[in-house]
Image (cartoon, rainbow, N blue to C red; front, side, top):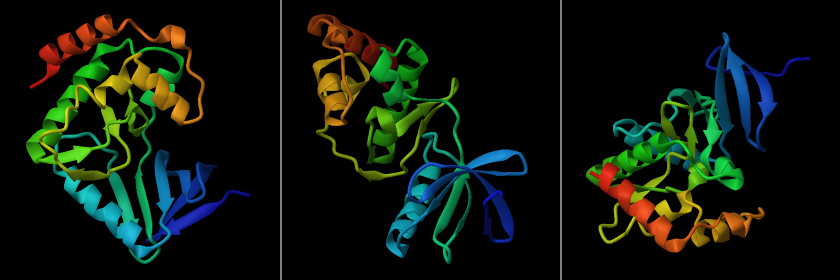
Length: 194
């Protein structure tokens, strides 16, 4: 028997349970990500964060609907490769991902916001780099994106340590020459940094 979740007289068929409170659902042939919140504070935080990031140029999944009584949000389900999962197996070969990453960082600096640039927070669908958690903080002018977050997107010692901190294995043979990696990062920064 199909599990149905009804929100505001709209029925969503559960395709897959993704976590304790999250589901992949379908309505009229379109797939969505549905999340049930534990309390009003976390739900209200999502709504506020979504509304703030929606007016920036950063790509986030569009919110289809939310229900403040049921504490549920329904957003577009983004098909594509999670950047962290890609980095577990191989280096990023598509330079478009880096171009979009630098663009997102520029948008956030312009908006005076700081998002979490860790690779697991992004999905690349072949055209766009989507930021998933909707969380942001106050921009810190002295924070060096190129020396901190960006290094997690290349085969560096920082990436290896980060992958291991998440409980995964990392082949140290993949770690590139520090000089070559720094040169690659500097060239991309010159090419894409605004």
